[in-house]
Amino acid sequence: MYSVLNAMKSVVWIIDKDHCILKSNKAAERLFNQSNLEIIGKKCWKIVHGTDQPIKDCPVLKAGQSLQQESIELQINERWFEIVVDPILNSKGKPSKYIHIITDITNFKLAKAELFEKSERIKTFFNSINDAIFIHPLKQEGFESFVEVNDMACKRYGYTYDELMNLSALDITVKSDVNGHAKPSHREKLLEKGQLVFETFHIKKSGATFPVEINSNIFYQNEKPHILAVVRDITDRKNAEKVLRKSEQAFRNLFDHHAAVKLIIDPDTGRIIAANKAAEDFYGWSCITLEQMNIDQINTKSLDEIKKLMRNAKNQERIHFNFQHRLADGSLRDVEVFSSSVEMNGHKYLYSIIHDITEQKKAKKDMEELRIQNWHLKKQESLSRMAGAIAHHFNNHLMAIMGNLELSLRLIKLGKSPLENVIKSMQVSKKAAKISGLMLTYLGQHTSGKMQMDIGKVCSMTMPLLRTSLPGNIVLETDFPAQGPMIYGNENQIQQLVTNLVTNAAESYQKKGTIYLSLKTVLADEIPKKHRVPVDWIPDHNEYVCLEVADSGCGIEEQHIEKIFDPFFSTKATGRGLDLSVVLGIAQANNGVITVKSKCGEGSTFRFFTPVETTLNCV
Picture (cartoon, one colour):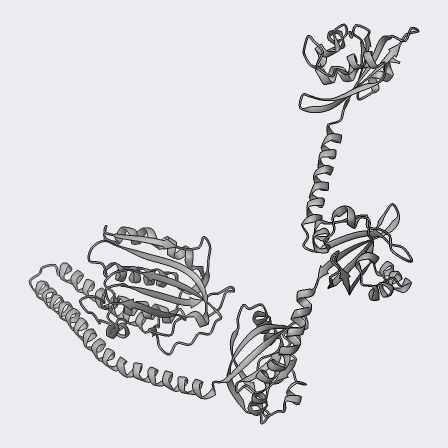
């Protein structure tokens, strides 16, 4: 008997009539961390509660009075236990002993609490839904009363909860529709598919009728089929459909007779759904023919590429496009397309307005060519100034070299060492060679030493030396990504470009100031065209790195912006001889471009753009 007690997980005590513990199992030792020798002989409440007196509602005392089983739930050492006490009666019907069992019910309590919480959440969700919900058993014929309804059902139909629970679907459906929805075939279809959606008319308590959409679903409770019906009031939708039908003709007239070329396109397939009279006149195909065509028969791009762009338009990510469209006679026209998403009959289509910009684009191209020609003409002045400056610099250096060499010859004749003069000649020669190297850089001819590199890392490595070289009144702030972007270029040239741009920005401040450096990636069509050098540069990649150097210094006058990259050009406010010319040359050598945005007295922003590279290129 005692071995059986010890095998039990619950604490089991035998207590005498005076409530002292006579026997105790191993579970009691584990629960109360005391040996049975310490437990036996003590009052049960002393062990369980640590008190000298029994607690209120003590099940032992209650069992002694009621002469039947008593129980209580208590928390012991942060866990919940159920204490059950059964009295053992003697021949006179009085308690002689008690069986005292303590069972750990913590998990049961937690599960019960979790179940209650879930039940409350489901109930809250059930009653928070904006549609009426009815639950009732499914019968082969007729209708049974509802077994559950939500708050919205009571509110929408005007009944109390108790009133609705005494009704069935028969009582809230217009009589003309009842027989149709109660057909066995109708219910068999519901049982077969598990779901059925249909429309009908329902009746409120007031007698008013209104259109509804019913979404019926089958579920089983106690192995019996039940219907969960979600009923939506579709009065507004029906009214909107009436208005839509009335306005459809007006829309058709506006679409068909508008002067702009218009197409309605299915973005998923590319099929032309509708075309107006202006489209017929522009493309040369009849509206009937156009409405049997696919957009790739008009657009020169591939269908896959067109579908990708149409998905963007459908999701409103992009609504403006430039394409080439093919006419019936085979000619091509440049067009500007504005597309927006419209919904018709539950499907999204693209409503596209097409403008012919062929002549406009040709005029723009002619203007761009004239601008480039004008720029090249202006460069003749720059080249003349550059030639004069180079001649001046080289003459000065040659005079110094020749002077030192003549002095060296005289010293040799006098038997003296010409070393000092020869060294001076070499130093001057190096200066002349440096100018020659800078000119080659300006011309973009130093293209060797290229490799794939992390431009963000290169710029970050340049900052400590730059900060050291800048005057104390200049603060350098940077915003570089932790890693990347990657480019294919010459590391030393990129460092030289950053240094020259930062130095140029620092010279724009008369007193203290801040220079801002940042790196980001942009798309090719985001690169500004105004004040872009070289002006005839054309992007050949989709994505570019943008290195920006901005200041709020003295700025550059508008008439000088196009000249600041000319070698040896300078004004009181801008220019550092060959520094910006070298920046332009480095940009060209790295397949890039420089843009300038500046306003006199408000500062300047120089941006260097070079292609993003994800694979190693070979030269």
